[in-house]
Each structure stands twice: as structure tokens, then as C-alpha cells.
Image 1 (cartoon, each protein chain N blue to C red):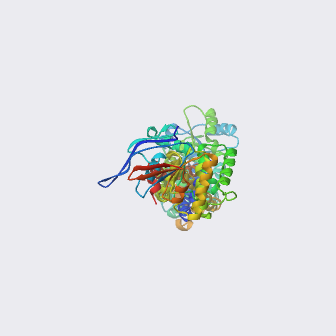
Image 2 (cartoon, one colour):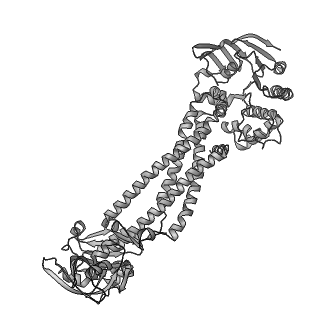
Length: 227
Length: 411
């Protein structure tokens, strides 16, 4: 069964008197364990699609089902619970909590999930090791490089054992070497831990690593290429 | 919850200077409130101490009609026996019967109106500080039924000094005109205009005779070593007092002073609420600015699955932590500032022109010692915390209305 199922997804914005169609009838299924990239030029709707899948944005029409749950039927609180339980997010500008250490940032989702302290500690330390930040847990974001901060963001996204990780332009603020290393990390996590990743990006390096590339143009899927 | 408070505390350190300034405003406001409460409670305590010692005692026995209107005919009879019974029932208390008659005091050169108080000299010197106010001559002696003490101001008007003869003339309880010769035994200066100009003091016997009520008094006042035991002592006194007489505690006997203190406290409370609201506006500004600066971050918290209510709780927790720390500091600073007032007092003599002053008709010392009003300090401290948390309600509510995607677009 697909972990993400999108049907006839519409998203329109009102900008003054103009109606902008960010998504215009998108149908998409993503299976567990996929490493999918949503590609397309600016304004093609890839970030909007990612936000709708993540329940961060409300579609104007159509349905989004994540792990068997239709998001449109959920209240604001239930949507939060769904994101907490099933989704991990990696954002373009890291978006870490500056007053928390790397360890605490990664632990935060587990705290919200109510994971017991001993298990929490074990999982956070393992996750930090998985993303290559072993020994850097007590550093605050301001004491880490951009690449390291994004690794903390990845750690935070996967620590809660989500069914799906959504990453919006995760390499956009990184130099090419650091970006490449981050992609390799996420690919490893996908292959070794079976974590499903969906990216919105126009970084060719990410596209090269993808098992599936979905091209969006003007809010529609133009091509859907599996490798 | 502890984690949330810890995170809230860390969030307050983001803009440390701003948090410190806001916290300092709360702490300073509260410290001033503690200081003011201490001064106020000290003056109330002094007013009550003076009022209780000179006017009522901790428990007072009197005719019910005398409570309503202080007319000379309403007396308590068999004072000696009743006083003895009271002393037996309350062995550590001082029993001080009092009687007062009005009339004229005449010297060879002048006459002045006088309220003549008859007291048991030995008892009175234990419960009032009148004996310490004698500036010339000496305090009364229960064996001397001719001695009279008058105020310095009255002596000046009468043109008399120590040892001079004066005649009291007044109406007895039965309407007869009675007169009696006294000799000025001492002059007192209390600092109270009314007391120094219109009050005279003598022993109980002569006043009983002048009122034609032997072995009677207008009041039998009972002075306790432990003022808190007044209600208990009233019940004991009631058990030995004949039916038909009022047995009142000081707060029942001095309703005007009690009401005045209550009113003064309420006025102060209203003022404090106004100050609290002003401080709360400052806190609201700080918390709101802090929230607006972090809209994007709150969007991320909502995005990763923190429920809106929990994010709002985080903002409220920031208000709570700020309130708790500032209140703690405010109390400590306030108590430290109040300590010298409690132990050494505040000397008003330079402003009042003497070592006593009159407050609502009661003469009190010009050096007023403060008193910690723990109940009010606790109330105001709690209020400061509540005000601070309330200030965070609007910013917290604002957060709950954010859509994660819109919030994350905020830069």
C-alpha cells in the first residue's frame, strides 16, 4: 500500500484579485522505502505539494492520504499528532531551536512523543551517530557549521521513527561538498533503515541520487520517472 | 512540564537585556509594594496598639447602651468584685477599669472644658504609656484621691502649675451638680492636641463620686499579654460577667479604627492593581515582541507536531518563569529594604514637630516601626505572577491561530 496517496490535489492562492493555481490536479502515489524527488522550476508547486503532503498547508481540493489517514478529515490538533507520529521534516534553513543543543533538538520530537527517558537517550545518541554528529551533541546550533546544523535537522526528522521524511530544499544553503555529503547520508538512511524520503529541490545532485524523479510544471506532474 | 519550563527559561535568555529590564520592572514594583505594605501595616499596628491600650483593651466590658452612646449614666456596677473575678479567670491579664465625666476645670484665673478620666493608676501604667508622657510632676497614685494630671496646654490656659489647686465641676449621673477640689500632681505632653488641651486624669474613686456611682465604671478593659487570644479571652470574660453587659473584643469596640484600616487597605489595593496593570502592559509588550520575533520558529514547532495548545503553553510558561523569578527577586529586595524599618522604624518627628503624632484622634509615636504584612505580601506576590502570566495570554493565543506554513514563511 502507498504510504502517500494524492488525488486530484488542488491548491489555489488569492493574491489580490488574481487567483494563483499552485497545484492543479495532482495525482501521486509514493510507496514505502522510496527516495523520491519533486523537481521543477520556481513556482512549479513542488514546495506546495510537499506542504500539503505534510499537512502544513490545506489543499483547496482533492485528497491527501498518509499511511492510510486522510488528512482533510483531521482537526488541527489531530493533524499535529499525525505529523508528530508519522512525519519528519527537513527545512531549507535548518530551523533548529537555537537555545537547545544538538542533542536536545534531536530529542525534542521524542519528548513530544512521550518516549521514556532511557529509550530517548539511547535513540538520540544512536541517531546523532547515524548522522555523523557523535560527540557534538552538547553544541548549540550557533556553534555548528551549516552542514552540521542540517545534519541535526535530519537527526530531528528521523529520531521519532517517522514513516516518511519530507525535505524542502535541504541542500540549498549548503556548499556543494557539504550538500553532497548530506544527500549521501540521507540515501544511506533510506537504504539501511528503509526510511521513505520525499524531496522538493532543484539541486541536480539530489536528482542524481533519487530513485524516482517527479517533474512538476505549473502545478501539474509533467513526468514521473522511476530509476 | 519541567522540560517546558526549562525551555521557557532558556527562551528568556535569548534577549537577556530585555528580559532583565522587564524582570527588574516587576521586581522593583513588587519591592516597593512590600516596602509600602510594611510601612502601612506598621502604622496600623501602632494605631491599634495605641487605640487598644488607651480606648478599649483587648477585651472590654461595658453597658450595651454605653457602646452606642457614651453617656455617663450607662455604667458597670460592682466593679471591684467583677475585676477580681476577671483577674482570677485571666490571671496574666491586666484589668483596668475606667470612668470618664465631662465638666469644667477651674483655676483662680480661668475655666476650661475637661473630660476627666478616672483610672486605676497601677493598672493604667502597665497598659498605656501615659505615665511616660508626664513631663513635670509624677504619675498618679491609687492612694491619692486629690491628685490630677492635666496636659501642658490645659495648664497654660488655666495658668496653673504643679501643686496648684483646681476645681472640677460637672453633672453627676442623677443630674446633680458636683464639684471637687484637686491638686495638680503632674503635667503631661502626649503630642495630641485633644489630649493635651481637654483631658485630665485622676484615680477612679473621685470620678465615681463625681458621677454618683460608687464602685462603678464605664468600662472594664482587659489587656492581654497575647493579643491574638482576644476572642478566647472574651469567652472567658463572658463566663464571669453578669448577663446584660457587653463583652467585646477590641475590633468590636473600635469599629471606626477597624473600618478606617480596612478602607485604607482597600485603597492601597486599588492603587496596587493600577500599578500592576501598568507593569503588565510592559510585560505584554516584552512577551509579544519576543513571540513576534519567533513566529517562524513557532511555525517549525507546529510543523514537527507540537500541538498549538502546547506551543501556547510554552509562551505562558515564559511569562510564568519571568513572573516567578522577578517576584522572588522583588520579595527578597523588598524585605531587605523593609528590614531596617521593622527593626529601627521610620522617624517622622522631623515632619511632625515632636516625638508623637496624632492619627485619627489616637496619639502614636512619631517613630513608626514597620510590620511585615505577610498575608498581603503573599497576595501581591501571587498577583504579580498572575499579572505576568495574564500578560502572556494574548501572545499565546496569537500562536494558536498560526498556520505552520504561513508561520514558517515569516522571516
